[in-house]
Image (cartoon, rainbow, N blue to C red):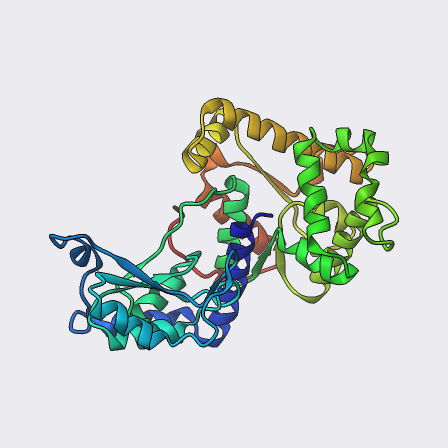
Length: 355
């Protein structure tokens, strides 16, 4: 997992926690209360001046530089930027990797007369309402790689049901359980992807002992799966959740309250989406999909003792996201959960349209 993925994942967790404290409805109300009369200078207008424009940043720390300003007199910094002729101010609010805070943005926006950008890793409409209520006149949107229709459908479904969606976070939880560095888990995952799938990895297991030698708790690479399986079972014991991949359908196959779903799409459709989302050539898109699918198939076959990842017998529902559409996939899953008695219709919360 690269640094952007780590920050994005941590941000999703953070926003879910913040929603528990201040619900979306309240943040939306606060944003709408700002109104036209409280509108601070338009960001684009400030940058269109007939001179060189500067967006000056108020930032306490960063993953690459570490702690930049231990004391961080953010209001004094903002005032100096304004006095020096800055067109706008960029204020970091991400708290874990950049040591930012919403308080910095709120107070800076109330102090200066130039527009302020909320610089954060926007992953939810909630954060845009937040930015408005804090006094920002612009937000940063990062056009990152999107996952395939399966992940998008599960993510929207999780939001509509008001529950968490677990994917890569399982690696973090497995790391905490084992006492091992999360990088060990992630590096093995990356190794499998880069070296031609799980089959190639198994052929080279003697050379993979480098992972084991770092920590004697690791008796074999199969322990990765054991830890992840334990985490999946613990999650299923304590809460309703959506788990993407990790052979979760197999791990939880003996539980009566589990619904397993497989969402697929034709290769051409997947290639088009990959090109659009990643900005790559058709050749790179094809190669990426082929490599990912091979990894998933080998991984699933190995840990389920010969089962095939695409076998519809393994699942309650199999959906084609090209023919049905992502949003209709979500609606179909919701109706199936209602039929099975796992949820009631009034539990479904509408969310914004998928983009």
